[in-house]
Image (cartoon, rainbow, N blue to C red; front, side, top):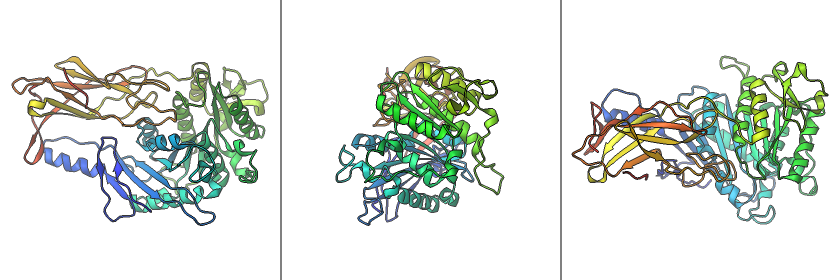
Length: 487
């Protein structure tokens, strides 16, 4: 195993010294900072990141391409209940952009809600064709070695993170393109561990024209109990036929399977997360074992809550009121997901009517002639993520972070999304520098979170801190001397 430093969202890289991999303990760092500051108050950490890097193997039946697994572990979880896997697709760009999946604030919100970890694998693909040296074909069929390496990594994560349950908890699988094919096959190899599968623009049916390399996938009876949602963009004609076939294989046996077509996109993920997250949320709610239960077997799907819709339609109704054939309908787990589906298949996104949670640990540091630095932490709005932040100075809007959010493949967000539903690099910092602040002026600062649809949180006022010989110290009361720049 080759060891790499962990690159944190705040731009911090720490070296690894002689360990098989490194656990970055942000919570411990936060506690240390709290002690240095000296004033009362709790410093909330952003969670822990664990990274494992495996080289390519030359052994038959093992993974023949290098891979890095990054696991985000939320703070305050005594026993984990599951792992959410966000698997990128084929190609060099997908591999690179998939490396940031575990740092995604919106997917972290889903993981945190259910005491789950968030896992983002990144295979070290060296060409954009599936075949050839270090091609994607070495990983996207789990039977060729990536299954064994994935399970091995979970065992290593469990040992190093001090959470042995990570080796055995169930998985909620999300995959894009070839990553959806990987998730599809994993659900047949480990049906007892898969909570649900969300396919975005891919499935194992893509490989049916290459039987010599990829043997037919055998679907065990247990796989038909797994909730599945197949999704494509309206411009993906070939993949739409394939995903409809995938949906049909399961739904023809009245398995809990649905289909959702994005009316705006092609192969890019667009705003599909605003439907994928509530779908997986509902499945986790139905299927995860109770926290207090000694029996950790996944619960069966509660079909009594289901809504159904005609395939190709855009209106769902409670299952009891559906007049068509159930095996030809789109299955939706409950009313909330049905309403999200009806909006998604019409608009390509899902709305949000509630404001986001406010930021926390807002801090203001005077840096002399360099101005005042405002920093903060925030958790994503569960429905629409984080669109950005507003910095107030003396009660008035002073700056936006980022100044101009980017939305190349969907909504403009604080973490700009890539083609592959992952945060673009470089990842932004929750930080603003007021370069106009003067040492002989006094200003107060506050920060507002803005969610993905533009709704605002309540402002949170910053606590002043100064940088001294022994690090940062908190000032009480809240007054600080102080147009700015985002750095």
